[in-house]
Image 1: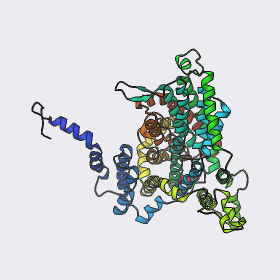
Image 2 (image 1 turned 60 degrees about the vertical axis):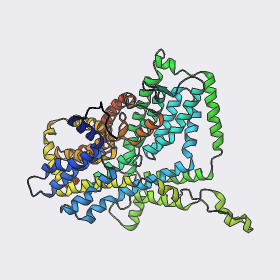
Image 3 (image 1 turned 120 degrees about the horizontal axis):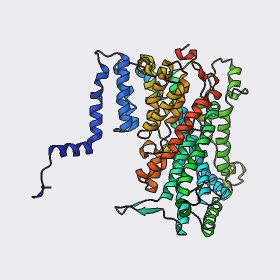
Length: 560
């Protein structure tokens, strides 16, 4: 298209700005490896320098997401063998290990809840139990989302609750009590404050619930896997019951603080004369309308189905078995297996074996009673006419499993393994020696604040992959237990409340409810402050109760 006669040509600076705005990802991809070449000097570089170079490039790529996160995770497979750092087979083992099978197994278990619709029964049941005011509804959504997110991914838990939030708000909108959207200065629909309150609460609750169990979010499995990779001779500190014993009280405290933050600010809880309290007051007619809608949806669900019963048995039995594998307060089934075969290694049977066993049963067992017609039918016409669906349908699961996350986790494990074997961890520790004179309580707070800040701008898993190994090396250098700092960094990496890009759950509610980033920043500010304080207190005071030797620098730190 030819330029207009009165159009002035672009200046060089304007061209540069336009090019940078359009092609910034390409510039990051091209310039990052060049900028970090100094890490390889003096030449020829040693193995720890190549590992540091790979870490720096991957950190930038992960934080900027200039290429997909899983694609960045392939770099160790390219760089380490070609530079003599690690052999190819050794690197590949990081991409398929116990932690990754635990991750896959936990996702498969989560899909059973989603496919059977059990989560809807739980949500509607909780609303009917607690009540129909805004405060009670918000509490119901907070409890349900937090609980569900303990067992399935944060993103899945958030996505499940989005239609329920819309259903509740639409009933109140039909009673002229609120508007789901309002027009901004450009005439576009954006979320009102009450919409922001509901939708931000569910994504924040999903984040909080995710830390309650090892399978609640990928970040938990990352910092567990990094700890096991870094210190393979350490005892199994992060077993399912021990970790949940530490995390569940913290999760409850965080859930309460998140609910109170949102209810006080947006619903006027404890502020009866405030503008928010007056604007969110619900009339008796509106409560009756919502009750009618919820009762209709509950009736539509019908009686508890055989499918749901099977999910409860298999899923619930699996969770119970996780806690009973090796609870250390009585002899678990895992301990019995080791004793029977005379095996001394207490890590011989791990949670991933159980996760895959329960997954196998879900693909094997039927989801309805039609299967038994094969045993009772007298005539050919009485036999089932079509394939009987199992509790989990592999054809559906295979289209939903986020395999890319396995590569993301594996890339972090490969980096951690190389850093340990090449001596990069010791080099990083030398740089961090300056923190040795600070009190432990201050260092823990610094780690938590830095990680929470960074994780708002980058993928939680990517941040954990980068920061947790550094935190563990810092602990070793200043004569602290690496588990302590790994917990602080790993748990803090989950808490992105303010910026949508930090976690997929935030993006889900932002796109679904049309929440401006500025409103999410405001909504997440107070929960973020509470999260930092609660994590700090729990890691410093509660972790030593769960792990009494966390105050000590154990022998396994040096591989003994």
